[in-house]
Length: 205
Image (spheres, rainbow, N blue to C red):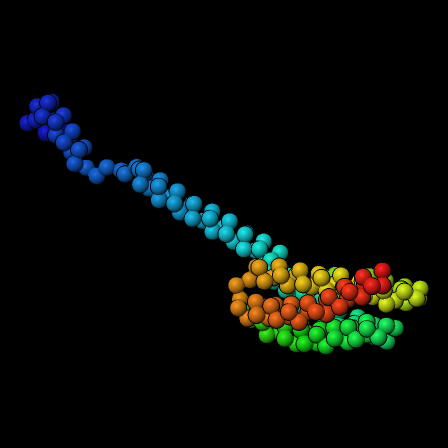
């Protein structure tokens, strides 16, 4: 302490120095708000990411793969069925169905590829589910019991209804114009064939 300063002068000098010295900044409301915004943004990003993954696993991609696999299986079954059908009307309807499925399986490639689905790389679980094993066994039993035509018309009619419903579901959940166009055209071509199977089933009941 300067011996020339009085006690009061010394006190005032120290107080003054304390006032002008840099003060340690404490986190204020602004910093807390910034951290809150950053944290909220990260949380929102995580939620959106989870939602996107969930949507992809149960959304159009999975349904598109299911449709592709189902159309392929129905083509195989319809081709094998032709030799077992006795009714001329049902044979004609089944022939039209086979032609329709050939076209649909061809036309499906590009719009599906444009929407991320390669029909040659369908998920194995979906392929197994859409293999048509139960339907094939049921038709074989019907053949052995001499009720093939009636059973085939009924079962195939039901399968075509599921195809139509699946296409409608995909149409509702996609924004792709090329995919929508494919689905509309395919459904229009399927409707008269579906009605033929329905009419045969009603007549044979």
